[in-house]
Image (cartoon, rainbow, N blue to C red; front, side, top):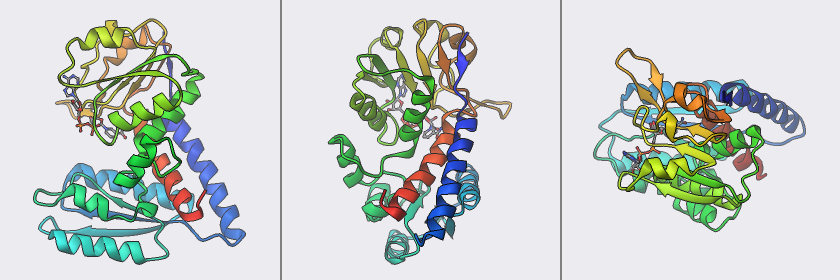
Length: 281
Ligand code: NAD
């Protein structure tokens, strides 16, 4: 039976560490880290996510600059707002909550955020730096996943890792980070010919698709580490992941639950990126 990789507990530990670093740093004259959260429109899930991020900010002693704009905000007005935040020396990290309402150019908006304040790690400069293995602001969800894998104690060197999903925010960057740690990485997606066979060969599985229980329990290799990124809402309102947790737990050595796995670590890494942006560490 798999052991649970408790992202909630790990995230709480990370926040505690950040809190004490912030209070010590500020006492020693370092600036109080500031994160701007920018929310456009009225997507209910986005409002919930931003609320969690703002709460986490306050908990660790960051300043939070919160901006809400209506869904009919023009591209030009949004870019002006981002430029204002780029120029504000109290703002060290900028988070633009995605998805943006229809009609706004997401790629142009993400590129408008100063790369040095890109707390989400989505700017093309930072994504390019990651590809070259340079230190930069890296995307939060993959950073959180790497911390979780570290907790499992698995040495990735020479292991076979299978990533399911190829998005710019999870699938591609986590593949690069696993590669950096010397795993042999396959990236699977909607056109992969035989997903079950790919997953069956994996020592580490990262599922980031957004389809409830796509990854079946009997696909999991005995002893594999299973990281479930997916967030899927069931008809009864509950959340579930991309992996059939119950069945996969019988074969995996370690597994993340949904909720309480990758999600809380994503927010913890957002804070960690903001501190890095503020203090240049
Ligand atoms: P996305 O929605 O941009 O893309 C989904 C990916 O899944 C695509 O690359 C596609 O090729 C692949 N895919 C679709 N159907 C497939 C199939 N049948 N077989 C194999 N691959 C298939 O991806 P995303 O933005 O990375 O989000 C993925 C999931 O992760 C979503 O549920 C999202 O809510 C969740 N997510 C969670 C967090 C977190 O912090 N926990 C963060 C980001 C995303």
